[in-house]
Structures are given as C-alpha cells and as structure tokens.
Image (cartoon, rainbow, N blue to C red):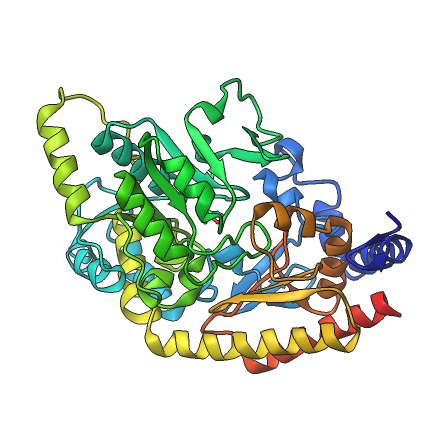
Length: 453
Ligand code: PMP
C-alpha cells in the first residue's frame, strides 16, 4: 500500500524525518545526556517502555506540575499523556502532595494500617458501590488477585477476555484472535505455555460469541474494560453491557470490570455512570494521584463465598499480596485523591474540556477531509487514523497506523504538546486549561495541514 491512514507513505516518512531533526536540534542538553541512552540500564532506559516513544530519544524530564511537563532543556509541554493515566488528575495534585509531605516523616511502609485506612474503606464503598475491598500496588496485581478469587469460588479454571484487551501483564489474559483463531499474544517473551488452554478470547460487542463461549459453564470470570481503551478506543454497543451481565449471571460466571482507564468517565467510573453491576471492580494507576496503588473490590456474594472457601481449604499461601501493598504512603495519597481530587466538580470541568477537544479535533479532521475519527470516554479522548466507529479488537488492529502516528506524535511534541505513545490518547486533568486544549487543537490542525497538503 502506498498510503497509510489515507496519507501518502512518502509524505509521512518525510514529516517524521523533519520533525525528528527538529526535536534533536531543540534539545542539545538532553541529546548529550540521553542521546545514546541512560548509562547502566539495559537497552539504555530504566523501563523498556520508555524506548517505545516515537521521539529520537526519551524526553528527559526536569519537573512536572498540573498538566505541564518541563524537560532539562527548559522546553515546556502541555501534557495530555499524563503518565498514560497514572497522573490523570494532574502532576502532583496539591491535596496529594500535601498528604505525601505529611506522611513523609511518619514512616513509609509498616505492613500495618494507619488511620487513613479507616477512611478509605468507606470511601471506596461510596465511590464504586462494592462492599469489600483490598489494596494492591499495580492494576496488574489487582486483576491477578481478583481472577484468583474468581477461580477459587467458582471452582472453574477458565477465564474469558476480549480480543485486543490489555489488563496489565497478567499472563493468562495475553491471548488474541488471529484470523479468528485464539493464539498466545504475539511477542510474549519466554512464554512456553499455551495460554488459550485456560483463556477464551472473543470479539468485543459480539453477544452471540459470548453466549457460545459461556454455555459450557467452564468460565470462572469474564474480565473486561467497559470500553476497549487499549485497542484504539472501541465503545460498547448500547445493549452490550446488559447482555454481558445477563449472560454471565446465567452461566454462573463472575464479571470483573477493570476501570483503570475508564475512570475518566466520572468519580464512580463507567460502572456508576452506566449502572454496571460487576462482581469485581479493579482500579489502578491514578487512584492515589500518582503514588503506585490499586484497589480491587468484591460483591457481597463473592466475599461470602470466598470466606467459606477459606474456611474449608487447607491453610497455606494464597498466592496473593505483595509486601509493599497497603502502605501508609498509599493510604495518605489515596485518601486525599478520593476525598479531594476525584470530585464531581473536577470531573465536570474535565468533561467540559474533553468535549471541546473532541469537537476541535473532529473539526480539523472534517476540514481536511481525512478518513479519521475521534472517540471519547469522559475525559479520555482519542483520534484514530481510520474511519469509525470501531466495533471490536480486529477492527482496531486494522485501524492502527504506526508510522503515521509516530510522525504525528513527534510533530505535536515540536508544537508543544505531548500525547500518549502506542496510540493517540489524550487525557484532560482537573489542572488542564482551556488554553492548553486550544493549543492542542491548533497544533493538530497544523500537522493535519502538512499531511493533507
Ligand atoms: N488495566 C488496564 C485497562 C490498563 O490499561 C492497564 C495498563 N495500561 C492495566 C490494567 C495495568 O496497569 P499497571 O501497568 O499499572 O499494572
């Protein structure tokens, strides 16, 4: 194919070359320090995802505040990536920064509760509806632990995921449909097991496939995002969640809703806004304002079945928990986030600006007649370089335009805007300003003009 996302490939390559050169030229200090990688780290980075940014080398950050990030060359960027959701409420939200300062001299980890934990249990119940909670450190772990409980209480081995999903580095979710056939997700390092033995995978929004996959009553749990956010952005058909809940109940299968990204919808997530009724609720990333923490909640029914299971089983190691989880720094930051940051007022602001961003980007796409579209879940907006809406993971896979997206990302950075790598995601935080949104729309327009010219 000579074009990608409706744009001539030669033009895309030219744009990336020009923009990469401009990126380097603007950053002499960063180039000297990280142009050849960070010393002492495998692959030149402390975590290999940092090599996945399309910029010639990673942006070396000096500081970040609100929705602005400043690099060591003194370049300020409007940050719409926000740590890919970890900083969705802005960098160092003031109530969280104060809570961290208060806790800093009182001990950082004890394997014992503090008084903040007394406040958190009821806050989690109020925000997310479920009655029983546990704290972990990453969304990956929260999902792993909840799936373990699901298997324990149902006595079933299998789980079900949707094609194109991402729930963290949870081994058993790493399956895909390739030409309609379940396979291990391509690229997994050191994986010898056939993960499709214990995980079923079907397309999102496919109720008939769901019914068929659950009918043998061998699936312990369906793990799902309310919207597929890690495969471009695929919204649920209007009756999909009703069908998902009804069919899982009929099959005795539990339902885990992973709100780690869709918490962009509101202070109770997509679950509260749209009245989902999951058996498990998982949230990581921004729940403690950027301090690593996650939560997983259980229904009354699951909790009583798990308690009964524990009474009957031989005592031993449950396979859950990590030493640093539920530490007092997490409690302090999480309490501040739940009480003072995840407010209706903040979400109303975020939603308002996200609508403006959605309309502005759509306006640019229409002006240049690009075969692209925009999708939005509350404060989370994504432009997709293919026509839409997309209905499932297979369509999302086809919609990806990696070289084009790379060129756009670097061009946006050179115009003062940072968006999430891997896809085209933009988040609005409570600290994001209307002026920042306007600058993003203008920058996107300037890049679209170059591509469409
Ligand atoms: N769930 C979802 C929906 C995610 O998008 C992610 C990460 N992108 C995770 C879980 C895992 O989060 P973490 O990497 O913090 O464990």
